[in-house]
Length: 157
Image 1: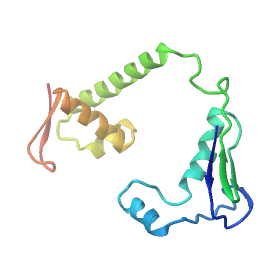
Image 2: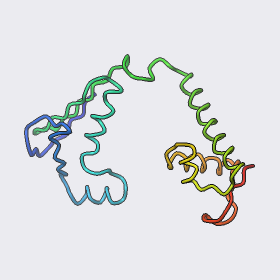
Image 3: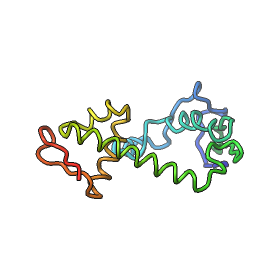
Image 4: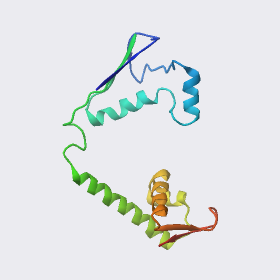
């Protein structure tokens, strides 16, 4: 897969994480999108592509800066970790979600005063993951909060 874009090049070279010098073409717009949360820090896309590309192809992407900026991401269906799993992937994901929700419910039945931060430590999960599942359970009516966010309790239905 490749993407090309017209460019005002600051160099004619291949970009790697070692020689990356983020240079926004329009600094005002770049700053605006970073401040409202629609863009990460400059250069994070390059670092993420180098980090995750090996999981999908076993190769590194190519970033070529010149009059035309080009990104080449090698893809290999045979190398991808989820190729050929079909409906089993959905079933495994559903079971994992149910297991996570059940783990949260089990802890809250024992200790309804636990905070989301305490749950993430006890379950060894990311705080955002705990928040996601708790919001999902609140929306479907299986979990409710009674009282304030500081001194309230979780009610499992």
